[in-house]
Image (tube, rainbow, N blue to C red; front, side):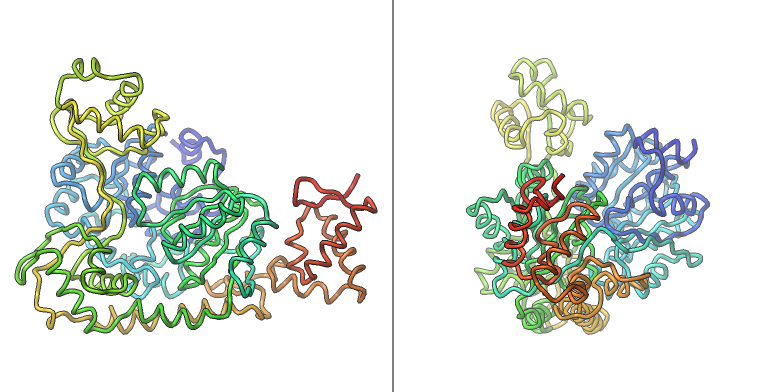
Amino acid sequence: MEYLDILHKYWGYDDFRGIQREVIESIGSGRDTLALMPTGGGKSITFQVPALAMDGVCIVFTPLISLMKDQVEALRRHGIKAAYINSHMERELVLTILENCIFGAYKFLYIAPERLASRVFQEKLRRIKVSFIAVDEAHCICQWGYDFRPSYLNISEIRDYFPKCPVLALTATATPAVRRDIQRELRFREENVLKMSFERKNLAYIVRREDNIMDGIIHALDAIPGSCIIYTRSRRKCYELAEQLTELGHTATYYHAGLPGMKKSENQERWRLGEKRIMVATNAFGMGIDKPGVRLVLHADIPDSVEAYFQEAGRAGRDGKRAYAILLTDGSERQRMSRRVAQQFPSLEYVQDVYELLGCFLGIAVGDGMLVTREFNIDKFCKTYGYFPTTLVGALDLLDKAGYIYYRDEDDASSRLLIKVSRNELFRALDPDGERLMLSVLRHYGGLFVEYVYIDEDILSRDTRLSLDNIYQIFLRLSMLHLISFIPRKHLPHVTFLQRRIDKEDVCLPPRIYEERKEHYVQRAGAMLQYAEEDSSSCRSRQLLHYFGEEAEGDCGICDVCTRRKPQQQPKDAYEALRQHILCQLQKGPCNSYDLNLAGFDPNLVEEVIDRMRLADEISFDGPLLIAKSS
């Protein structure tokens, strides 16, 4: 079947977008390929379509378990056989999935890179007939990159098992140096980079200095209608800001990595469906979120890097319509960034102390602990030993990257279910909701009558239209009746000791893990601070493109820097200058008052001129904020 036929059959699209066809044809011809595609560029299509046209299983490495689950679920909805193996599945289930792959039961196998540390896993994997290897978020392989994950370094080893299989590496954010690093680490046979332009012509990048960040948030929300994401660095601030906005009459919810899985899904779905206009979130939110109509992405805190900012800002305006990415600053960014450096890279002595106390806290003696996994209550640890959470996480991250432990603060453990009675006995005890739920369970999962099977409540909720809380209560009731055995998923982080516990004095941090990464972190932070300067004279879009090695053909014309230049070309009389500016803008189509404020006009003058023009029947409102010419 031709690539375009596959695209139309499974996804209903009539043609490819951007460089999708080029990437598909490149990997289909057997060439190692690095594809650079901005957020919303349709990366998944570039490996899903060619995999369906080829024999064998496509192995997909991805770092986020929640994203892994979502993509497998989406493939199954299209009638495509897919499975995933994450880092916390039990051995028996993993081996069953691998055996099924060996016998050709799946076209896609999504894998958490951490699994490659197991030799047993590798031996099973090498028996699978593989079409090609896809590496999502490939920048994670760069040891000095902004999101380095040590487990990604193991991916290149399996190339020895499949020497003829090409590799497709995918990322939305990579500087020229990171691109070279990705190709070297993945052992590309020849350099081959396919790149979409990072330019977003519909997205207005804005930096605004505000003495009070909350005032800036309210001003932007009032001026720009539509769905919004507000990014902040603090979990507590997520909740507090969402509460404040709700009290002010906005519909807001929140999201961070520490929320229970059911709460995450519920909040995300309410925002996706439009029940809540505003999502206040940490950087844990957004990966794999495909909502095209986001009109505004606000950053209430400055991100650590241009890469992170660009990826988060890029979640606005995926539908191609005008959208805004606004970074709010208050002048204290450099001081806060210095604190972050100290938190991300605490001293070796601090890291050694954390390592020792971690072993004590988890009950692992010196000389023991090889591949032992324990739940880790970070709040209890901090209260017990008097640690500040942010710096503690920095130390855990360094221990992770140095190979001493594996630490993830992600809700990634799935629930398990075993049916303890016959089908007839079970269904005799069910009410209508319970029957609908168990029919869905049996449709999606096999082997439930003989062993525990991992289930995904999010899939069941979408299939049955029952809330996650209803599903939990039904499973709980059936467990109390001894009809099923239900083990809910856990929400605490996990720590795995990757080697036997050693004395703290023997813990060391190699230069590539500490000094080199710290140096690159400071460089990336400096680039972000430079971008955030409000008095910049260079177009924001041009600055971002230059950072990623792309030269813009011209200024964007819509960022705060570009719009500040426009009033200088207007008549001297402020009222007439603004009136002419409004009429000029309306010739291009509807606009809103926020566009006018950005152009450098005083907000009070904007309000006065709009009122006068309405009375003179020169303009009218189409909706609460959009200005349109009167007919």
